[in-house]
Image (tube, rainbow, N blue to C red; front, side):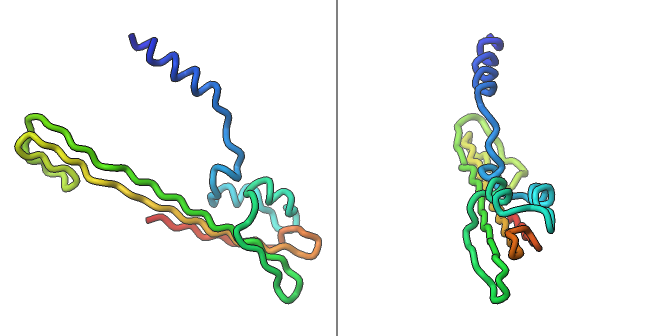
Length: 132
């Protein structure tokens, strides 16, 4: 029986292909591996991170690209019936045979600012990540 459940899952996972970096999100590790001051070009940045959210031109001709990424995850609660007792966990309540799980939510934000010189090569970059 287990074989019949595992086989379809294995076939589905074999058919999936990895997402390009720009669709996986921006992480500090990806930024550090991709961006090299004085080396990385604008087309390489576009390939790695996609189009920026904001572009601007500073007075000295420096082009600045800003990426803003936000991801949130919510896991809903569930309820079930059965014989139950009070539990010590604050996220669970079992009383009179009823169970209710709490909700869980988390958010992650990433800001990446890249400056390019007149040759369209990365001159500087900074990133900030937050999770809550």
